[in-house]
Length: 194
Ligand code: GDP
Image (cartoon, rainbow, N blue to C red):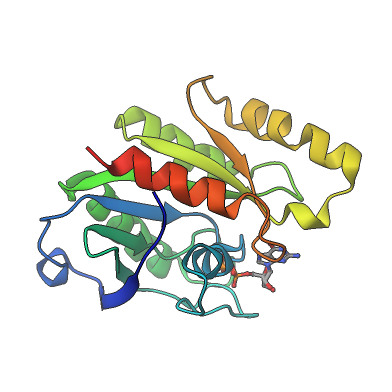
């Protein structure tokens, strides 16, 4: 499948404000600055998500509609140090509430930055997804920043640090250079199609 159309639907914080759960949904999570907005723009081939040099700003759940039949959801990034304990708690409640209760959620795309091993928060997120049996894939971002030997090891580092089982797919992408973006897009579209 390919991406024919995308439109922004709305931003929301509370379940009452989410669009009706009448279409399959894909959500994207990762720590702030991992390259989430850049990946969304690369998948959609247009600047639909903001790319900011100041991480940690987004506090909203953003809903997009793909090909008029799949929702695509951008969740606020985690792990930004300069936020208060209270803000972190609010983030946790909002994200957990969404991930646990959104009945049409079909697939979670978890992003990790390939320049570093996955962080403790990435490990926690993965364990949380596993414990609630949520279907997810892992995408390593910014591979254009790696040299050949780092590229060759990147998937292994991600798999070992996150302790991923073999059936969890890992994609290594560059939003900047477009590497593996089309493959990722067609695979996620076919994963949510029933
Ligand atoms: P977000 O906070 O997760 O939404 O991350 P952004 O998409 O705003 O990106 C954070 C920073 O990483 C920005 O300076 C981007 O330009 C940079 N970045 C994102 N994706 C890539 C990539 O594929 N390659 C490179 N070299 N930089 C990237």
